[in-house]
Image: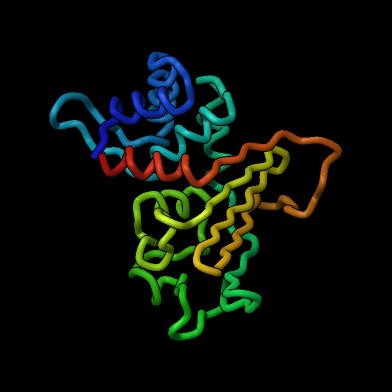
Length: 205
C-alpha cells in the first residue's frame, strides 16, 4: 500500500509534474481534510482510492494549491442524478430500482456489499471503485473501457464503463445544477481507463 510520498512520486511521473509541486498540492488537500493524514516513516498511513482520485483530478485540471481544496470539494460532492446499466440493448438497472436477481450487476447495497451504495456522491463512488469494492461485479481491470468526463460549468460529470457487452452510465451534478444545461463554452476534464488502472496500482503498491 502506498503512503503519501509514494503517491506523490507516482502521480508526478504520470502527469509530468515536479515532485515538489505535487507534494504541495497533496499537503493542501490534507490540510483541508481531503487527503488521509499520512505521517512519515515506516508508520505512515496508507493512501486510499479517494486520496489518489482527489490529487489526480487536481493535477488533471491544472489547479493551484490555493484553489485546490475548493475545486476538489466541488467535484467530489456532486450527487448522482441519473444512470442506467445496459446489457446489450436492455436496461436492467437504474438508480433507485432494485436490479433483477441474477443480473450481471447488483449495485444497491443489499446486492453488492454491506454499506456500499452507488447512489452517493462522485467522490465516494470513485474512491470505492479504485479501492476495488466493485471488482466482483465490475470486472473492468483487464477488459473494461472506462471514461470520466467532468464539465467545470455546473459542475457535472458523466462516468461510463463498458465490458463484455455491458454499459454502465452514471451522471452526477452539483446540488441544484441542471446536468442538461449547455453553456456557450466550458472547460472539461477527461480521465480514461488506463489512468484509473494506474491509480489502482498506486493504492495496491
